[in-house]
Length: 88
Image (tube, rainbow, N blue to C red):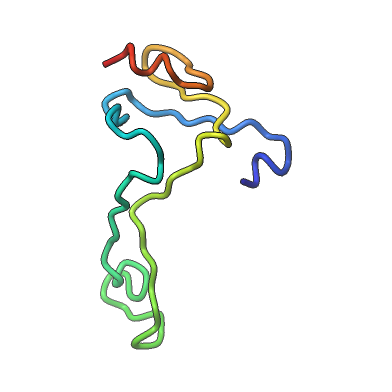
């Protein structure tokens, strides 16, 4: 979002092995959530008040319309990213 707001291109560099060709949209991606302790007390040292709410996703999903291109080990793919299906 910040890249778009400042007219900076946003590239995703990832191996094709990490692209799920069966997933049609980002809304279909299940986000893994990691342990609260990664945020509240790394290395066992509490840094937040007990009971403080924590949101700790393992990753996020960038909406496709904000991505300038995907850089893979074999090519640079630009929207509509249809060429990805040929890499299966």
